[in-house]
Image (cartoon, rainbow, N blue to C red; front, side, top):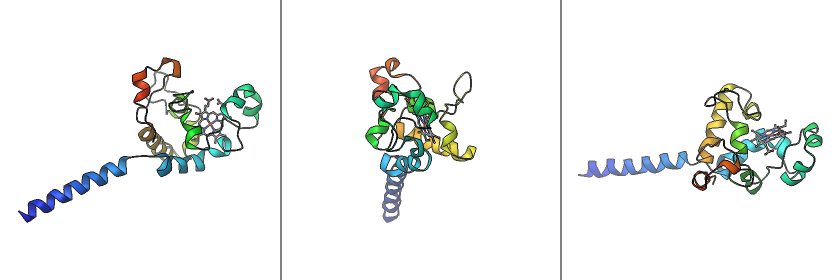
Length: 148
Ligand code: HEC
């Protein structure tokens, strides 16, 4: 009996531990990847999305993309006003007909292994990896995108 109870407890702990390890949050992992790989061009000295849109070409020349320095500023591109943009830019292209990766995929890492690892972290965080544009996403699809 004790043995059964013991293994039942071990099983529950294992499942909890597993579930916990699988949950990717902004504070847990995404912020660190953004800091290491993205904020040089998307940090707090980069323009807001509104300002960026007004003067895209100039900002591009300055190697500045829209600001993604906080959770609120980042999810604009995940399930906000510009939903799907993060997924389209970071996608590796493997599930697309033309096989072309998004133009920010290259920044996910300096080796293909690192890029793939970081991509899978982003995929877990986003919840439902959808490459559609904001206007094409149904309410149901949008609700499945759940960055915590
Ligand atoms: C060397 C600078 C640089 C780095 C590093 C960089 N980006 Fe960008 N990013 C840009 C520039 C410039 C643009 C705007 C030009 C364009 O649309 O390609 C942009 C555009 C984007 C967009 C599209 C925004 C929109 O809706 O117009 C997303 C999403 C994005 N970047 C995400 C990322 C992520 C995530 C990372 C880190 C893995 C990253 N970028 C790393 C320079 C950079």
